[in-house]
Image (cartoon, rainbow, N blue to C red; front, side):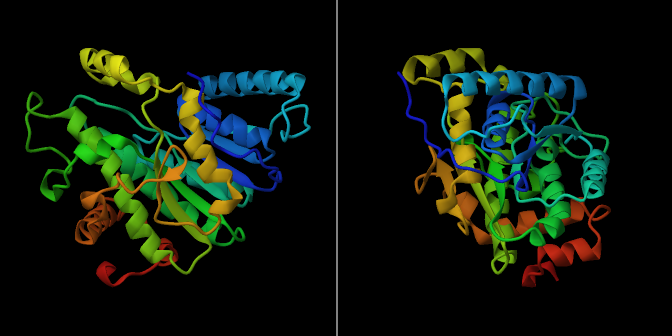
Length: 327
């Protein structure tokens, strides 16, 4: 079955800068390519320079193929304006190094797409002492956003932070005392549940961050890309996945990128915040009670600031926006 493209092809100026984490493969790859083909300057932030360069070469090859097909509304350039900057979400120091390198470019930043992530994983802790899934999927993206907000706030109107979450969050529960999972043995640690929780945290971040950015030029949205055939599926039970494949059609990575692309480029979404998108439409059925619980959101916020206390200066926290619960 062929799905109808659900994002607009718009003309983006080269001065519009977009950072996408984990964009060397999967839905992030297609997100980066199509936004660049609309004219924006795109930085793909991922661990491997070699894989990033291979991805950029492939993007340009496919870009030329689109031009030969006569695809409308794509930029008339010989080469896409896409570059690589190293970022490893398993290291908070790597996040800070990325921030320093980005600041050194002198570029503005208009769209930050927090797309990188890992799926179900065995119990493992980073050198920073954080549970791996918690840090890679949520905590490092929070730090990246907080550090880049000062630039976004001075980059002009319509700046967007997009948190790529997932539908699995509806099966998660917020338990502050279990957030790092250190009380569990390796055998008792449920990696799938911690993956689901990381997706829940991203939506909770959307609401709590928007409260602090309500009067600013920066909006935060989140989304579910749908069931997509990507490497993340390798982390799930193959029997369960095969059963799901018989019941529903999994999207291709390109189709899975549509909701993110729409959230990033659709002019109609300028100024839109606190919306969880599914299939490029606001979803009221997902982002349920747990994600919308303000008390839990503020618990997560305070815990997050505690985890990042060595990486968030007072100036950065002030730029992020004070809130009564931060005192």
